[in-house]
Amino acid sequence: MNDFNPLNNCFPNPREEIKNMQSYSAPLENRRNLLRLDFNENTLGPSPRVLEALQAIKLDEISIYPEYNILKKFLCDNYLDSRKFDSDEIGIFNGADAAINAVFNCFGEKDQIFLTTNPTFGYYSPCSEMRGMKQISCPYIGENFLFPIEEFTDKIIKHNPKLIFICNPNNPTGTVLSSQEIIKLSDINKDSLIVVDELYEKFNGDSLLKRIDFKKNKNIIIIQSLSKTAGLAGLRIGFTFGNKNLIKYINKVTGPYDVNSFAITAALAALNDKSYVDNYVLEVKKAREWICDKFKSTKIRTHFGGGNYFLIWPNKNPKILIEQMKEKGILIRSMGNKKDIYNSIRVSIGNKEQMSFFWDIYKELDLKINY
Image 1 (tube, one colour):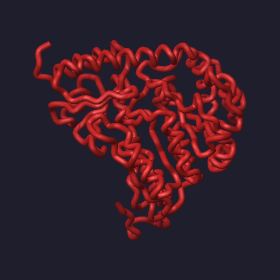
Image 2 (cartoon, one colour):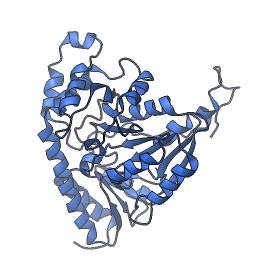
Image 3 (cartoon, helix red, strand yellow):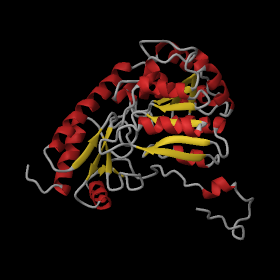
Image 4 (cartoon, helix red, strand yellow):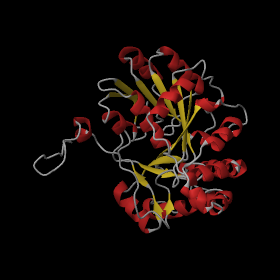
């Protein structure tokens, strides 16, 4: 909606795309000291090594500009057990959202086509709108939210999109598209850049990053971060992986020191404690199976997928249930603005103890069954 009134503003007129765009609504305040099952963050916090590393930072390390080579070398040699990367195949960003924005800064053009699915991560849309792109999307299929591979393929052929975003597993449906299918999509049109958002891939395990050859598959870029698994959401650290020429161009539209020294130090500490992250992911997977089994004994519609979250369609009005859960100390998120899942709530998954607490409160507030 265009809300700019030149009579009430003593500054230049913003671009039309900015005036008309729908801004992305992110969590802001008053979420601490509650069980945060609303934004898919790590619910336990990072490895103790992260705090130790941050506490060990010296004053002169704060007064100097950040340095990235140590982290980049670690990513090249140790990020994955199964392969190594060239340094120029990696970009470091102030969170995954900064990486997404940089891709649009680099490749988004007015009146060019942006293709994605719907519903999906809400930040893609404003990024495309502010560049004046034309967005087209494909809905997921059926109550199980299957990936619309045929329609997606047809739209790539018909519309020749400049940018294609695939959230995999998808947020909020948890839909997973196999690595092989993504590579097939990239072969349809080499003039389309496919961006694979893999923030939740560790909760599923089929990462394209493990098998892609960026020298061969030049029109794919993969985004990952340390927010969902390693617990560094508050420090903002994300990565892009792609063909060296892709990364070179994306780096041109980023600032020289966008990622701060604290985030770099914390990332190195978290990545050096791989067992901590692996154990947390395993706990979440076990809790996902446990809470899924609990809901099977009810008549509540739910949907579980490949992420650390699931959807429920509660008996109560979602807004009322969300407020009541908050009063009991639990945050969950309405999906009222998401296509095809308007009356649902997304619940992030923590460990078994946290999900047991959630289940007890949820039963009390929304179920008419005696347990």
